Length: 173
Length: 240
Image (cartoon, rainbow over all chains, first blue to last red):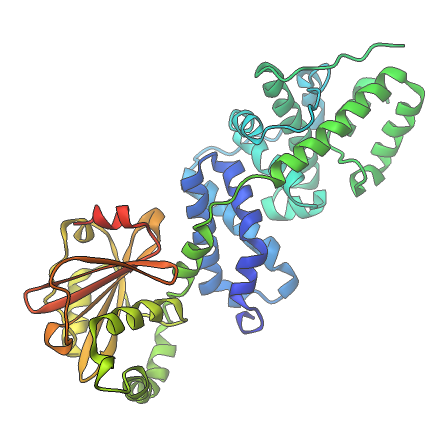
């Protein structure tokens, strides 16, 4: 299939989004650059195995995610957290968005979110992926994706509140 | 569904997206309409999602990344069967390359031309003839093809893992191309040629940019070296 795809164009279209995803996962610019570079290198050598050109983007994100998890050499499986488990961890109110969030604050807080929740949260915000697409990229069930997003967003908000982002507590008028 | 359960559903729903089309999300939204406190929470939640989405999209991307990706993906090792099939064609192409690559004997044999053409060749699509991490194997391969094989690597380069090698032609001489893994700096391309094949080989170490690559060149023990990389000059200096 590689013959049908202009690699330069593919890089142009996706390298920025892949870098942002990689940085969200690793929290480190150097590691993020390595992950993106290696992802495109793998595509240049193995991309011809793809049969469906419409799946190239998902393939890139999936490959980058696998490279990241592989590099961590995690020996334990991530426990799956069902939606019910989220309840006690929801912050009472989300952080009050200022004129705009500072990425450095989001990044610092995201880095403290447990690793299994970082990828779904990053894909949730970075790309207009559906739950099903995120599930496909991360190779986890749909229900797990939803619960990890909910739990990850809740954790991110809690971290941001801890870091001093102001919260607005709703009051009845 | 109560307000607490509605929050757990809606916290994972982006405003204006298909996330809100599921049955449970619609049930939660119905509850929002009748619960002022929940409505306020949902308004803040939507604002948070919008700001977070914008924040992720504004993550700055390093300017050098694109060049690094291109430098890495230009090196595509061929599977053995393709190499074997292409072998006879490669010989013909080599002859063609010699004619095309260095057509004129006058100004064309300057070191600046050599450096420019070798570095630019990296930016085009090409293949390594051998892919291995074993430098001894690379030397053996180059020697078998009458390319410079008894080269000396600076300390910093000798510590880097090899990726493979190829052979190019320069006038009537062979040019060895050794590829090294520079880690975060990407692939390094070291070209080695007989010093006598150049009219004006560099007398001392020279740094020069060729398009988006940085190069450093030097001559030593009858050979001229050109090292090309997408890494910066400071990093190249540390390799010596």
